[in-house]
Image 1 (cartoon, rainbow, N blue to C red):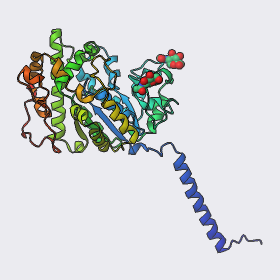
Image 2 (cartoon, rainbow, N blue to C red; image 1 turned 30 degrees about the horizontal axis):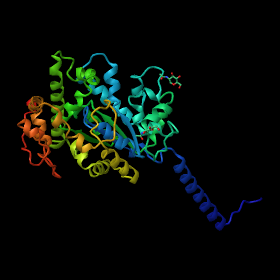
Image 3 (cartoon, protein in one colour; image 1 turned 60 degrees about the horizontal axis):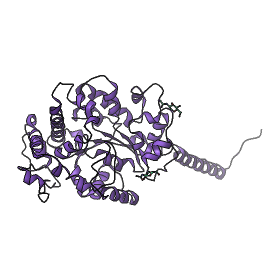
Image 4 (cartoon, helix red, strand yellow; image 1 turned 90 degrees about the vertical axis):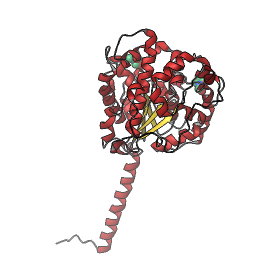
Length: 398
Ligand SMILES: *[C@@H]1O[C@H](CO)[C@@H](O)[C@H](O)[C@H]1NC(C)=O
Ligand SMILES: *[C@@H]1O[C@H](CO)[C@@H](O)[C@H](O)[C@H]1NC(C)=O
């Protein structure tokens, strides 16, 4: 009877061969697999939480242009504009749930806010996202190059959002900028979700500068203002102060929650950034933010940041959402020569608590306001809020 005989050495050889093949194929598979570059569990999710006219478009670009970032500007806009005459309080959870889906690169929740037949261009300010101007969404901008919004909006676009999900899945960081969160509590489930690694960058700005900037494009904010003020009726002249008061209160609410008595899942996940510090030391501040979320500064981005923060002119006549090259440090002081003192006084009254918490000095006369050599920014220490009294500042008159 013929017996199938294999010598021991042949056997060992075959086992080794098979082992090598397994390792080889596993390596190939890992390289080819689209998940390899950024397994979704390793993704970092960043919420750029800010308010209107606080420099968040610029900061959004700082993240959007980074080759490792998938960025979207204000997804909450879709929620706020699609539902009829609501208030901010009832929309909070809808915005939160939309964010959870997008962080997970699932755009099905977004689709209900869009027309039935929709394109990438139906996403609010879509061309501000470098990722939506890059492959696989659009061949225009290689991922490691800076994108040009104008050219992108003219040449890119795609039908449906599947390609957006596909793109999102390939990035290590998903960064969403939003101006429609006024508290942190609704975000707790996201912070505790084991599938998310959420970091919150809270960008604040001197409310007097915010007011001055909002006045330049007041009509752009009518709908948002009504929602923020829960559709309350009030004299038009009063709206701006009520809005700025709400914004100031939210800064206090958010910052105190995160700094004074943070729940354990919030520790190390919150970073407050003042617009004025970014304007004074753009590269240093942006480096710190990158580090906070685990991104590396590139030479190209460093040069671009320098360029856009050291441009010429005060940029006073610009569109509501345009980022222009101008001297950021100049712009952050412009309110001091433009706003009448009585208005400044009123803002200081409604924002008293927030200004002292965030380190903005008040002025006590028109003369003081106009004297630009008087620095109104309280320097930030590494542990910036240790000098605060432990008791809660009365948020009701913030
Ligand atoms: C989407 O793009 C297609 C083809 O480019 C176009 O025909 C259609 O009108 C667009 N739809 C919307 C909702 O913009
Ligand atoms: C974008 O491209 C347009 C057209 O080529 C050009 O005029 C504009 O200066 C570019 N913008 C930036 C910010 O580079």
